[in-house]
Image 1: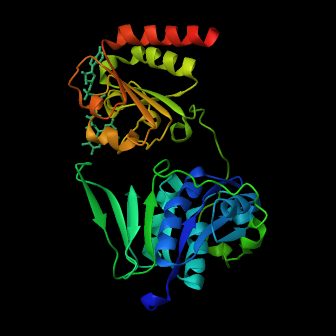
Image 2: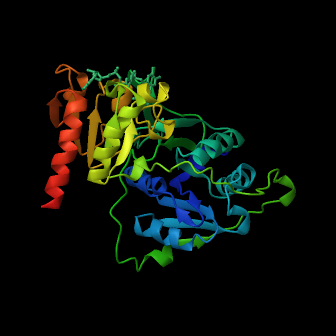
Image 3: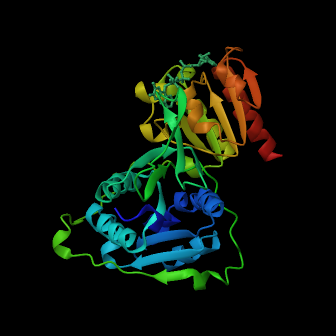
Length: 339
Ligand code: FAD
């Protein structure tokens, strides 16, 4: 490894699909900015992809000091070899101090591969970040022991320091709408990807027809827990979500019981969400569930047990039987909408 002091700046990897940036990349510019300012270094967005110039401009508008973008047909679809080779080359060229990545499917694939190539550490699924301005060691905080305690992890011996953060944990920075300075921040890069090193070829993309569940970006989520009783009763949850124009979430108990697919699960082993409104229906409020939804602006809990822990985090609580409360609520909201 080069001398530790040679490593500078905070990098945020911005993942794109068909040229469009995934929101988590922009979200990571928020903690990235804090880390960069604390040590007086630059916040740099890194975007390999195909047709990513607009995404690069957006990253600049969201506050990156510099945006390194790498354009090429070979980056059109994510492939481990291509992205790992590209990022390794860029890291060796620029030596960033820190690399933040979204814990998306591709981020979870690329992060460990890159960390291994660079012989450094990676802390997955962080929920809070800080940096020691003297040592420049990042303090990566993440849930441990089944979510029962928060562990703060350091990577003091190796550089760059790497970590992943799930979508929805941080909010995007406020963009600079003017954007006139954005273009000057863009720096075109290239990487010498050798075709013989690419072991995979995408022959066809098949959409399996799984209804996409975009919980991370939903402003309203109505979530069902074991208290809903059976799979068919999720219709009550869906009805309320529909009248509110929201998405359907779930606790793990319902996923384990096969009442609803895992894509709907909120929590430590599901999605982290930050909607404006989260309605928890028949969910007790286990710590692993709270880990995924306590960032919601307003939490409403419906539970027949007045002592359920979910009421401890809820802004509003309704004590009652779901099967009576939910139809009333849906009907009432529908009536108000029709006024
Ligand atoms: P329960 O805890 O059984 O609660 C059901 C609630 O419904 C009760 O409060 C009850 O009073 C209420 N109720 C019952 N009937 C009615 C009715 N008719 N009307 C109104 N209320 C009613 N869980 C997650 O959700 N997400 C995760 O990502 C997750 N990850 C985990 C990771 C690990 C490593 C571990 C160990 C556990 C994880 N869990 C996760 C599981 C978690 O610990 C809980 O077991 C789970 O959240 C419980 O789901 P629940 O609240 O739906 O069910």
